[in-house]
Length: 315
Image (tube, rainbow, N blue to C red; front, side, top):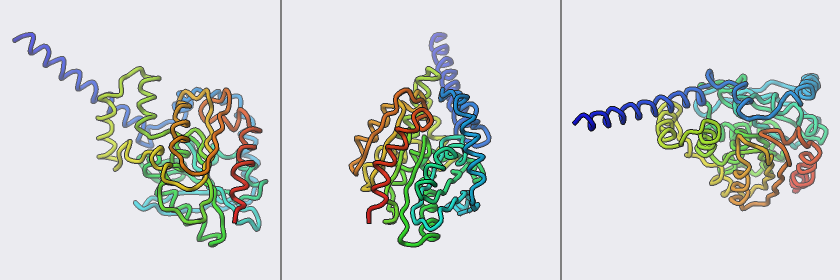
């Protein structure tokens, strides 16, 4: 009898501990006020000190360019922020989606000059629950894909039916782009760039639990998933980038660093294999998470120039 009570008590304590871990994981990861950029950068492992001077200089240059702050409203009533940088007379626009806990201009100040010099308008957005956009719960692409659809409509309304749109995302923004490709999109969307996307929020969280916290996914993920469903309104594997990109006919350029320990490089191979449209895969040697365009800007830009730009010129 005593042994049975001890076992029952241990089971209760174990379950309580698992619930506490899942709750901590949910609150720290999904709620805007608790998701800290510094913590994400430390977990990602990239040595940003190497690039900060160049990023600051790029931001200063970008802030001197003509631009306009723009806003749209999400399907669930959130005000979403973007900044539009026009390229006079151009009907080509790249819409940029940033990574987890970042902001649009943090991730795209360096690539902005590349695109503007190439004759593209630039729309850099803050995803929901980031930057100047409203929102309490981070969407991990599941919610953001519907916001992306609204941004696409904004560009078409602004520039007209003859415009051509490129979607470019990194990390969570890249997963957003791939999930967006699974929606019914207007013909103006011509191509996409996915830089270090994860296959699904479920998959990447399991990898983080295993590789960084040395914890088993079960049952923490199952408990956390119920919390996300109840409070944020979606499930962590509800919208899977691997499944969504398989639906598209839009050409995709996949980029990933082979030293990425945050979103394993194996995920880009899964995404690439799932994609049935015109596609290209570029692996940047020695690049960590979201580091590819800084580690080897020449290879990165040449991949966009040689694969994406010709597609954007097709009639």
